[in-house]
Image (cartoon, rainbow, N blue to C red; front, side):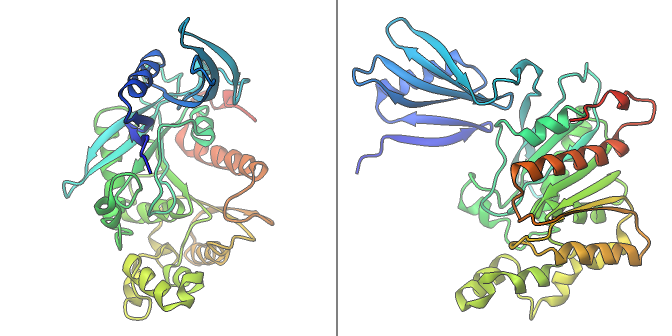
Length: 361
């Protein structure tokens, strides 16, 4: 077997390294021709004169070109979303952040195109997983939609994220409500301290683990955020451990204990970092979104969080997706994105701002 190419990410953009010197020089020339974007060769003619190339970036969902290597002309063939103008899309910048314990983490900040030099409000958007998942500087419809509401978006590849080596991945084990959220907070502090966003107008939200992180972050920092959103999020860690299929085998139980903790011997510790049991500490409005047919994070998590918020008289909004699974369909995502946008805009835009001009679709 011969290794031809290495694929990696640099500053959040996908890159390709060819071990053949000529091919690698050709790849570098393509990247020079499309600066700030990811360029991938998808095929070539038999005589290697013509290449098909796909170019993408945070502002470009994907553009397809045919490159003539003799004339050095690249002709645009089609685009993934031709109805979108890349010039009207928000760009994302990569940030290297140092956490409190010295851990180096990467984050991506998307600033709305119409900020005009003013620090915009911020939605912190932790990714799911939390292990073996990562955010990248790619075109993200949800991020672009939130940015269209004049709101910046911060995505953090906290410890446990994929793409940074095994030690970084394993550094996230058993770090729920601790190291993982410390990393997120370090990135938030960085963008606030640099004046990139308005630190007085911030919300936090996410899906799956991101939903858990949003609520536990609001508990850890009761004065930092104005609202929190959990979409298909875990609210009861012992429930999650006992309901997963891995718990049915000895090997699976050992893996869960290594990553989460043992719900038998560490029950109290897991309860202490479960949002449903700390609802009395939540001081901001919460939006709960969940699918009724979620097989990965049972809808019972949403009902338990809702019940505890009600018991303590805490404000919340509720959106149940009938028939939806853990990963919503495109149609369901449209409804979720709309609900999310309306919710956070209520808290991030003051009454005197141009909220009336926000998009309706």
